[in-house]
Length: 180
View 1 (tube, rainbow, N blue to C red):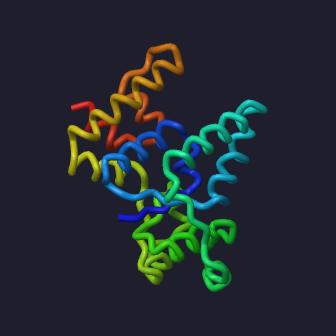
View 2 (spheres, one colour):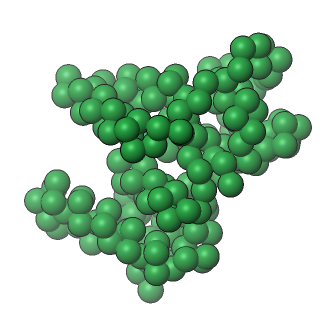
């Protein structure tokens, strides 16, 4: 399954790491564009001057780890498409150009299912996708989540538990599943 990861699911660290862990386990092939990565870097400016630098270094690591994931939309594709928020048309154009199966996003209202269906695409929310991955591979996803938790605790100096970390990352279904 080929999935375009929208900026809003790449920017939050825990969400991104959980999605990429599922991709490493073979649940899907991630896709993004240079523009999506640039939007992530620009969004990180809100965290202060070091936020953008941190994002750009994470993007460099992402590009190195996933060299086939970065794709640009074909010329002219964007011009024939429409979405309620014109600023998101580039994401749809990427999905169409890359023959993706779905767009993973938190922005449901900006990616209406009926418009995506016209292009043979689905819209997936990251929590639902990760929960589905957990249902298919509970042990693999538990190991992946444990690694994400370990990294979060290392970076924060400890204190995180699985369920609160994933709930804060807006992944409540997978948090509940992994806490059983």
